[in-house]
Length: 278
View 1: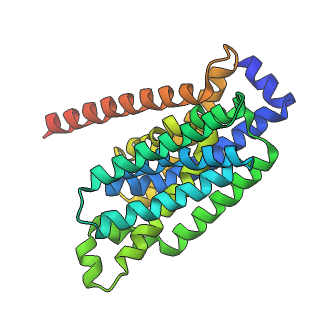
View 2: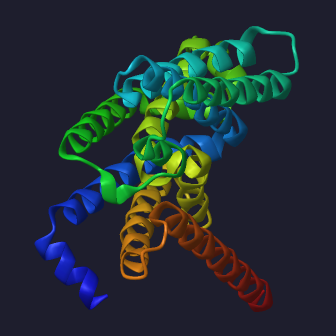
């Protein structure tokens, strides 16, 4: 840990990494709360893995893969939202198809582009230590956009998550709000790509919120504690992985999983204690 702190003071790339972790924690803490409340983890996974198609296409065309990720994430969110709301087909089947086709498309475009690109692999597996200043600025603006939209539509998102039918009766434009929520999830996934990669992104999106849900009573409290948990696991995971040169994204997710299991144990022990008192 001493070596990590010394490196943090002297190396800018570590400072960028921790700032990226903070921004990612804010984004996933906010939108992950809605994902857990609405129980749409599978939809989030479908969006996340479809993004690989856009990344592969952008790489093939020679443009920044982030723009491909952004475009494909938004497109996937809208398609999945429309399918969920309007289509008669089985929702999980359509999402699974998009999931598979998106990843297959990305693999094809990567194959068509000659040579090996190590930077491209970070979009699959993540590497928070490679976050550049330009990427950090992009993460900042995406996070700011997510926060701004949630501040404006906070109540609408909640009523749609808890009771769609009641929301329709009250005149809330449920379809628009729901698709907007999926778009926010898509933006969060773009923010998280560099942190833990497409393969593990859904874990960081949902586990901090799941941990927070065990000990909070309101969505706002859940968001706050989810953000805090996210900051703790990204910072601690980066510190743990630094000295032995472990994969940072994977270390963050393993640590998050340990926190989740410990939180479940604490919650269970608390519930048992409460029952004994009665």
